[in-house]
Image (cartoon, rainbow, N blue to C red; front, side, top):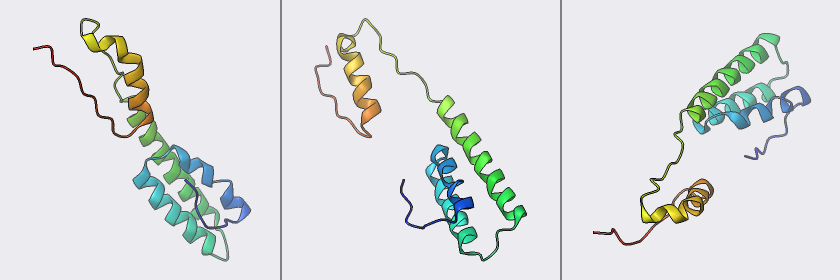
Length: 104
């Protein structure tokens, strides 16, 4: 995600930390980073609070990523022959449409 603001060097180093956060957290943290960037001074407690909030958001993201179930296909199904292709499509696309016979 590209952000248009040019951050002060000490804040620019914090920006990549937001890549491993959920979108809602990332938006809020980007707004907070923009507010910090607009300040003439950068108080240590404000930077520490931003870092703490980022770490909480990263932990939430990691927990959610860890809870995503593995994609498994029953080998008895005819579609199993194409399972690897389907898994690749699911991982690469937000929406896919599969069509085929139901077997009934």
